[in-house]
Image (cartoon, rainbow, N blue to C red):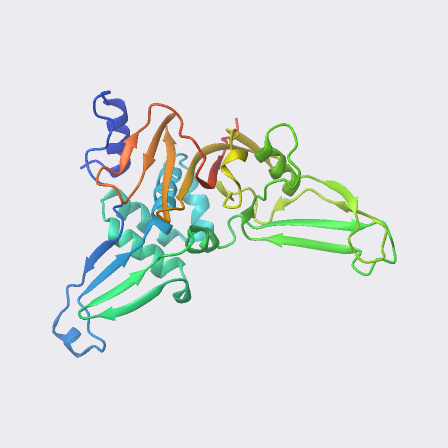
Length: 310
């Protein structure tokens, strides 16, 4: 039996223009997990015999992207195991490969999310888990210290009360420029976060110059990074860079998650072997091969993978 990834690659290779959709649903929205309860379960309080998942789009797109990323480089599973745990990575790949989509969502919920990050209630004989919310809260913030960065700064004024400072961040939030300059806005915003610079010290009454070092990853360059782009307007996203230089490492665009505000719904786009695909778990036909790269006007995040060193 072919794995899900092998099936997707085969469908790309054997694609015909009249049918650009994958032959079966992949990671459908929601999910129902039936518990095979034995006699001892009758004594449990409260009693439920199935788990019903709702509003899973806040993790679905990223789970799909994570699956693709783990197959992009033979070293990525080992590297990600250092952050997410080897047992989790092995189990995640096994469940995705074998089309166990509801179970893989429960794996993420119970292994990586905190109880306060989602709502749950018992209704009749079902445990209902509702993931309605923000995908960056439900996924990106649960990637342990994978993308942690630090930047040091020093003020030229010896009397500055906070002469030495450290700014540590666990996720990568890319804020749009306050003044719209010419050029690639996303790359400029990324450079603003990562590159060294000199600015006036903001400490009251200081008047010194503060020198910022290059921002670096705390645990080495990760296999992939997620750029939180949810504060950007569509008119500022006319051009998305296909590569970025982050802390002396080159990263290549792998995919993105998209947010439809009217439906409050997330979907995703990613590429395999240079072919772009769109995934939307809410649709009946939810994985489609695109004729061209997608438009990123409804962008929630950009996902880049570390380029292979030659």
